[in-house]
Image 1 (cartoon, chains in turn purple, yellow):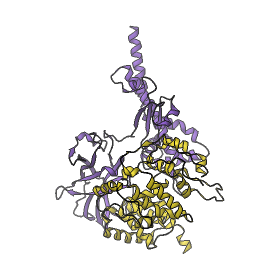
Image 2 (cartoon, chains in turn blue, yellow; image 1 turned 45 degrees about the vertical axis):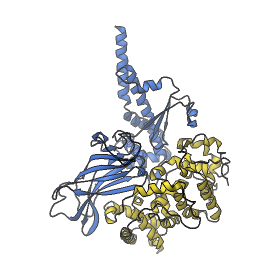
Image 3 (cartoon, one colour; image 1 turned 135 degrees about the horizontal axis):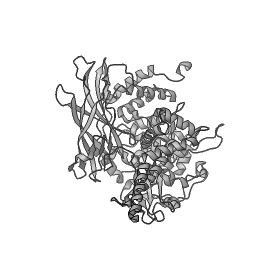
Image 4 (cartoon, chains in turn green, blue; image 1 turned 30 degrees about the vertical axis):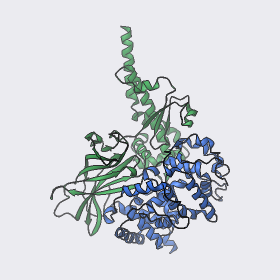
Length: 331
Length: 292
């Protein structure tokens, strides 16, 4: 827990998204369905309506301050509530004042404008309650404990690791560098903005299998295949992220700010269980760059990847389907 | 020292980072030999034909002028090139966040500039001259051209590039501050430049000390309340981008004009400049006690 040199509220602000609309390039507005945002995932997906020509989005917000915010003997005055959108990829910081719904209430609401040209992927949305405390203006007295994600591209409001899957004939692709991998069924590229899996359409039937749905054994095999790909992706992104760490002068490694940081924060607890993520990052970095311990860590990294890919579940379902199939052919 | 590839493309394009490696050879990183350009042209993704901004000639001529003008002192080229590159390319932040564009600029259009600017001088520790690979493809605050573009974008005050030239004149400032979140707040960026111009911060240690103090104070202070900024106006920037086709080449002697956005509110910049000056008084700076 952090210690603050002034009085604060000790519970977080609760933030909800209440509406999302897009302004299109022809000047019209499209009010998005409530499926564009998920309160449980705390994520907004602006790509959901499939518009490619939107100019800006208006996100309706409602925030509830913790009890005590309006207490008559509170240590703060000039209470204000701000929504702040930040994007580390584009260095954009946008803030908007919310207004109090009822004079003595703890609910505040308002809206925030998201400009499309200011973002490339995901931005992070937080709310701060700010007041003057002990004569100091601009003190934050409570904030959201977990930011909402505003995804300007995604068509589904989910928080997890974003993955791009592209299908290409490795032999004939205009991306000539893929030709070097012509005999692989898929490859993982972690150097792009989001990790990308290229599936090789030269392997006959692979797309049919990946697109299969239904309940037959095909779809179970597909799930197993996807689990295998995901394991590859998680392993590759972990190594990519660890290999690219920036080291503070005279200090330890720092968490990357993009998805690589997210991946590390998620996987490190499985790689070094029971160790705080900051310390885990230092230890893993030491092992990779130091004299020993990196080889021993590979099993843990693989384990962290397999868990995330749901490989055990996928395998169990395939085995069950195969057993059923065998039984049916025997009778 | 290397020259431009024998084949320089006419148009800017996108070069995926995964496609970069075959061209980032040992010879190039040593500044000895550059690829011919023909093979690289095969692996790029083109940008729209009808957009004047993707013409290579204006950028190519800028870097050639920079290399001529700043031969005696290449680090000074940053302050000259940053605003001019920014005013020539006219990118949105969304476009500028695409590393593939910067990869292409560095590898296909002007690898000779990257080598000229970033080939290290031999030292006792590392006797071999070398260019760090991150200057060709790397984080936004390290890559040769994207660091200049972002410095210009984050330090310009509306249409005024003067603060950019001042900020880029101090290598420590852009090296340290560009990767910090605090710079995303315009009045903060302008206040830093004022302190630099008034000589209140100069050395890398002072800049490090102050940015640490600003960050620490930022954990309890919301700068948007202390020093409010104007909201961004997308129409102004859009017009500036659209005028790229008819704009004349940027001036070589006078600073160009940026997009006609509102400057950061003077009141906000003044408040933060005073506040940061107080922080400098109290911030621990490594080595300051012993030298005074």
